[in-house]
Image (cartoon, rainbow, N blue to C red; front, side, top):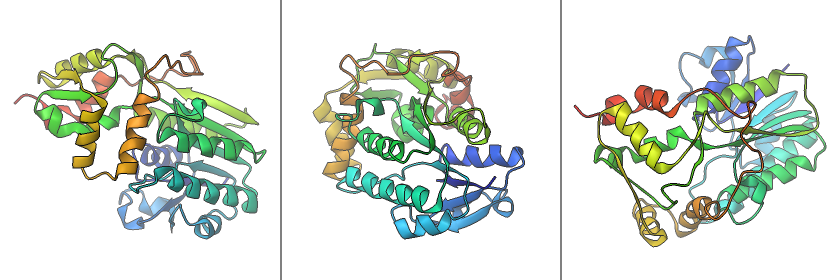
Length: 292
């Protein structure tokens, strides 16, 4: 089986590549800059330089591929949803023209809304486009990545987190490596077919107050969490260099899911993965933000 992996240096993709190698698979990896590959894996993969927004390039890079792990690339433009549409057009062309029969797509909790969830709407568009192709496709509806906390290192060092969600609203939190393990299981398993939605919810739903407590215990630094207004967060994102369009898309991922939202896939044994936020924080953040 020839398996292609997009974003192989990303939070999830690098773990997908490693797990495939452990399974004895030599994957084809698609990325903009092959030089960014981990030196430890570059001799064991077939790297292809690809811009995922370039349909011709994606089609050429996925010839003779049996299964594809697709992640819509990150965007920093004024119109993120237009970028998602371009990436979707590229994967649709690749699957159609190359006869790829199996796709595992990294989606998100909230994509089931289809509209009104900011940047997640772009993932919803990819879901529906892949569904229309009639191939075997699994959409991984993932919870909030633990690794998003790494984007707030400075705030964590200062002992604070600012969010726009209610502090006692629980949501699914998940380790990227656990998502990768689910993805690889789906890529390699012959036991499923048709359209599937696989939730990846992590070990527990957590509120932001609980998250602050876990971070405090794991790092030894007291972390306080504060709810701020949408406009205050909008200002912070703009000062960080985001375009106005991207600011609204990022905000929408929270505002679109905070009013009576319940994930379509409820937590079950199948959707629950093992890595805890405490364990992940101890491994990834303790040395950077811990109280010295």
